[in-house]
Image (cartoon, rainbow, N blue to C red):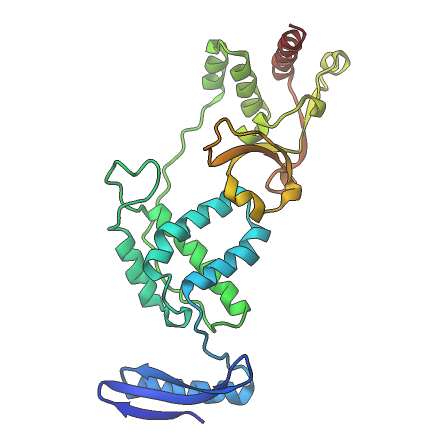
Length: 310
């Protein structure tokens, strides 16, 4: 049974529970009002009687996020997503709330934290010599990371509810992207004096390919033979993409997704280019190539073959 004890400023709910090691331990929870303490007392007694009580955890936010990245992030995220969240945890979360116990993090804690972040100078290569502050977009990504981590903590039975559920990060309105129309693309192709760029423009527009997919094309995945070209049946098969990743993240993520690692240009490089599987299974696809794009690919193949002979 839990009990309520008066202290000089507030009230304590005192109860015993069985820890993970099987020992019986005593816990004191402090509240500002008697009504809050009474509500918590009834809650503890009900949960202990029904067998759904979760023993309090002394795990910190830092420790939770480390375990979350090791178990959840490695299995779920792409290289880029993993690196992005790792950077935000290191620069914006751990220095401010990393040492807090997860059981002490409340919605008020997070709302106060998000408000504080908006007044802090942003960290990053492009921010070192500027006065850029942490943007609402970054805070939104931080909130997404914390919400996912605390949901995992609930699944691991470390806490009962997610403090992020009702926390409100600042509003973020993404900028409207400028999309080129067919006339703009035609002008760009006509003015392009570089065959590689011309091919990229054709594939990006006519085949709706992303830059990493375009740069990851190898000739064994392309059919631009005379027969296919004359029948207007040229195609390419997308099954890999080129991406730059942080070297220290390579060992943490799935090695079987990497086809090739390009050697770094300098020994001091912190990142390398890799040829890897696409992020999702739906990205693996066969794409029909219109004749204009096929013609530019054939020109590029001829140019490359001539350079190889030379």
